[in-house]
Length: 345
Picture (cartoon, rainbow, N blue to C red):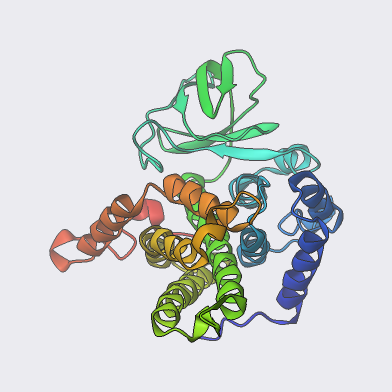
């Protein structure tokens, strides 16, 4: 399979790189520039002024943002907001949500990063009650509820409080997002987006480290010429390139409408298991410079840690992947996607 970007995708990568490099690492400036360049509306329908593209193109932008580890709400707005609303939102919902509002999703609950059966409840009167964690501030929130389903909640509505990432809802007004598979689909977008962003974060850390060991001299020689250093940077390279292949494969299959759950779980497991030790190796090869707040490497490791927490950690992702493999055994009676809830992309 050839995952090299085509001409239009390469243009997106180039434009995103140019815009982000021009932002000088400033989050507000970079976010505004991404919007002005049309990179935040790639998945918005053309009738609303977007490009009408999809998951892979959005993943390309996320990867470039991760490569520079700029603290913008791209994962929440693009992967957890724009993509699901463009896919399952009604015409009226799209008109309301995709024309200037910031979006985010409330998925995680205490003790469960991506619950298949959320404890948050949707009452018959259309109100929602529950607690979500790790929620970003936004104009509108996509909230997963038991059923399972997804509803749209205004964080400023009565019965809603959002404080330091904790969303509490008590009979808060909500509007359902159409689509029988939108709950499972939102989880898929979350995995694809996090892996794409993490792919860029690790690639950026690798680039910083490779540049450092090429130019840093010790005993009259560049650090890169020492065998131990070369072996360690090679290990980081292997982890980074493997993650890139896994994340790209998952985004491509998801965008193409093909079964992507296996690819997504593999990418998430590889990232949560391999990216943290690879980032630690990058810090080690930088020596004291890697600990300096004035040097950008700490932004990459902080982003990687945040994404690992978002995905539930390495042990959780390994458990999820193991359960998927077990469900494929003939005696289980389950298909490759583990059930009807994950049968469509």
